[in-house]
Length: 144
Image: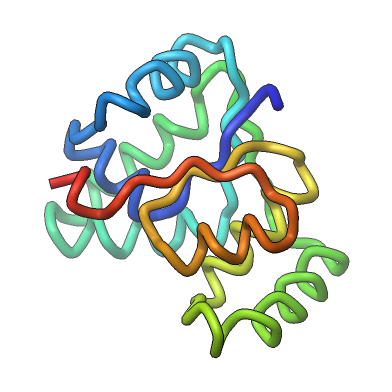
């Protein structure tokens, strides 16, 4: 694994400079170009919504564009195979793990890109483990 995919809640917390000890090294590696960060367009739309609601659209746009300019950022739009896989994962995990469609995009891209998924969501952690995606999990309270 040479990279990471950070779910929306993790990215939003990092935007607020709330980086738990466990994730400080990976976040530094991402910022300094030692590791790849996979940025999923569908998750960036969700991130925009969360940041804009709190601080306004200009700050949300600025931070997302900054993320896209990171040295090893890989911006990934959905294609047909990812859309179909995401739909299948949503069918599989929406009820049992309470996953959102955005969570399923994260799972599908993490599996395809073979990167570690960073999340605070228990259901997403369980689903990732079930389908063989490497996951780094912390409880949401670690971001407070």
